[in-house]
Length: 431
Image 1 (cartoon, rainbow, N blue to C red):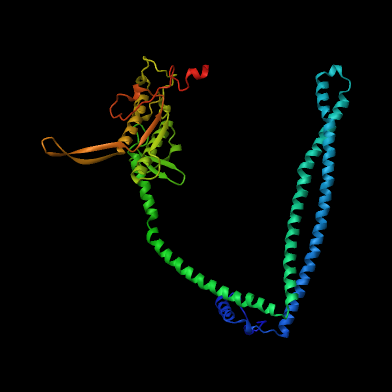
Image 2: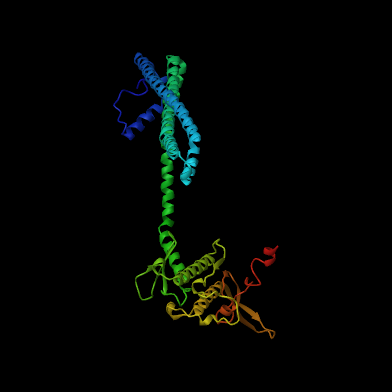
């Protein structure tokens, strides 16, 4: 309005439609439409005076802040000198503590215990002052000094900006250069905003189209995720050992990696930490991890197709110091409190190995192929490939536990690191 580009009108800055219309009108003007009038020159002069007033106020504030900064810097210097003096006093009085302890230990031989006690008390007073100085002195002043420096920098930066604006207005009033600047700032600025509004409308349209595409696939993601979790739970339930207190894994939470269990004929489920015994923990952890790996293998995920169990039989291991001797009978080690559905220690451990062997077998690929016999007749047979799952078990349980029982197969023993055949050879230690 000051430069004649739009007519005098009331502008409601909350009316975005009206603002857009005015911007469009301005964007369609050219440099010849800019008109200077006495009123416009007066407006510019008022703007320059307003900048001068702001600069005067800012310079006054900066001077006051700098004086306060100088005072604090001087106080910090005094504080540092005081701290040095206290440190020197502490250094001189430190011997008092040694003399005091010596005099107390040899009170019959010393006559100056009272004087030494006073000297020691003086040391404590100086030390306390030094602590107070470190805690309450320097830190408070330094924090305030940093705040002052930040405010000075902010106001100085503002002074520089206002000074630059004032110089521009003072140096270009009535010149062609000012008209060009106004063209770039006002008309060019309006054109830029109108273009941005147009681009934003196009972008909003594209966003709506993409959201429509996403909606086609997004509606069943939660349902699909829930189906996957149910599938994992079902796979895990096929590996729950018979000695487990609860029959089924009820749910697996991916958010906090928790497992809940229940009995077949009960609607109530429990977290593992509510089930109590270590044998339950072992049973459900093994089942869940085997179920997860079966799911990963079936889905061909990047998860490594092997799992390591370190001493899974620990909760069942004999309470005696187990040695690999011929006269030891693992099967005679019965559970004293008749838990785990009456299974013995040996039966529980064997059950674990059976479960692991079942998982190995479940992850073998099977296919039917046609063969031709020597007489020319064809027949079909099932080919079974190696398992896609490898289980590595590190355990004290020896061959007497897992070598012969039914359904314990696919075991490849490596080494027994006990007695003469230790994991760390004697030659390494003696050498």
